[in-house]
Image (cartoon, rainbow, N blue to C red):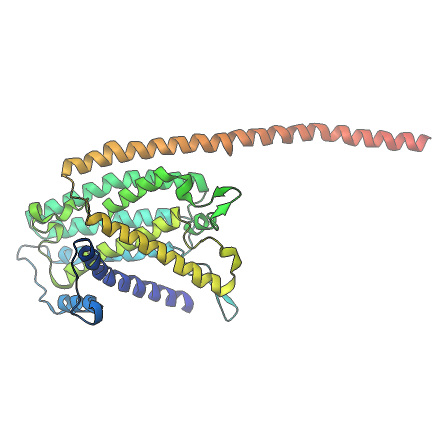
Length: 376
């Protein structure tokens, strides 16, 4: 119990620390792509910039619009932050670590419905945005909240279908089991990572993850040219910080889920040459390396592509992503049924029935042989 509590506290602390420094990474990536230097005043190489930003938000005046709903105005950022943090509980961050002869799983909860837990938590997160936009009593904040909710509902469908494809192929809803099935890198002449088996599913999941995180070019909920600041227009101080932190935590968790579902998680080529705590440490470092690579991809896309129009956003979600995901699911089901599923099971049943039909003949023959031997 104490070990689990330590893991929970460590996960929350690491997640919040990473989310804080992702703000610095975002600004550095933007500066690199725009041929600038970026933040370099707060501390050496600007490494204390997240602390400066956090201190600024913490000491700012906490105000509330006159006609805003007091309690819902407070609850909205809390829901967004809480739902983004709990999604990391079911992700296996590395192989089991052994301390004092006891095996410690680098995972808060290894539930057999981990994928459903993440999808459910992500779905609840939109309530925080919707409540915050509605409680602000501001038409621009309400428009931003409506955009965010419609966008998330639209792209959650395609994301759910792509997740069902992975579940259909692996036969499990547990993220740890899905990761373990991608052991190593090469398995009997085939690449073991799911990205090589389901490239279309990976592309669909990547695009929908961008939309779910409200990242550009899908940041229609907070576009400044149309909605001033979107659903958090009236927010300031730490309430605004909660919304911004939740966005970066969601991006970190989304990239971790991509690494686990499609890129083997903590598996890497040559991992069979290591064992014990060495394997656990290397696997954890590999997992975080994959996660940070996709975080960089998310930031790269943000500072490369222009924002979609709202009709283009809906068109891509309903007329492109969902049909592609459904067709890919159908093809996957047919292939599995033909190679591993119903057809192979029918052949196994047929061979088993033939064996049962032949078994009495063999027994009777042996009995007859013993009888003839005794008579002689």
